[in-house]
Length: 355
Ligand code: PMP
Image (cartoon, rainbow, N blue to C red; front, side):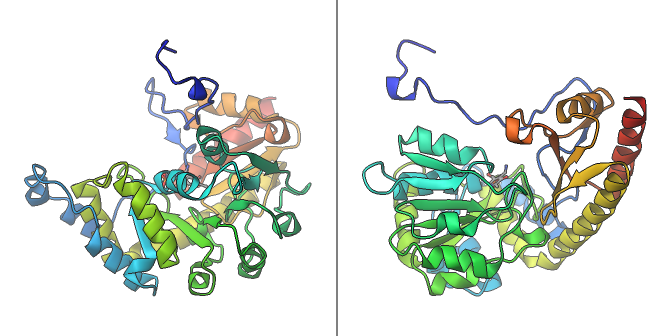
């Protein structure tokens, strides 16, 4: 740290993204990317004609993208916010809606690690609420809080989802606080609560192109909420970086909507491969949660989480291991192609017979 660093950030513990080692070609199952390429419409849209316009700023309002998203999700364009990945939207939400005086924040203790980082970044008090023994989120812990709420649904890294009715219960019980539902993984088998934004002005639903729409490398996220919530987020965006979605990503995002069926079919395929893999892993002595996401959360009856992670890495397969005591027996394994998962199962099988 330099001697110039603002002291209020000195103790900040930054988020650690999944590793991207370059020493060999890995089967990469550690950052929940899609194993499928973007649709043809996206490949066509990001063409040399668009590249030739890179001397010009992109549309900061992103009106075409918002219109397309609003049509696809049956909301109004003023209910849509778009930004540079859903991390950006979560960041803006903490900035816009949380404050230490009267709007602290609650989120599950085992969840997406960035929630804690944002709370610390903005100096907002937070409560990390323990999960139930089976890793489920106890709805009653989030009723009548005096705090904003952030919940990933499905949750990560557990993969477990709350129902639409449970989410509504939480939103209804906190009318004076913003409830952010992070639906990064919802397309793989959980219920979205987007339809609730008309009824509850305190609900913000955050989505991403990174998982179900095969665009993690492009950085594009979107959110739905009451028009006033969206205006607040726009104010933050226009006070930081109005051009935060680049021209190529914008075009890619618009084009992806035109081939939505392709992406939704991929999600179904991923869910099928997830179930197949879990069945194989259970037969090998693993316990898996009932994941509704594009990853599996699994622990073996004998081989520890870290040992398995290291043994897989040595054999060219990357999965995500978290050191935190509550989940260190587990690994989070992104669902890849059927071939990748066959290789995974075969490799795990040989590791556990040796151990
Ligand atoms: N929310 C959750 C729960 C996630 O796991 C991730 C991805 N790591 C994100 C949000 C951020 O996704 P992105 O910024 O790529 O849209």
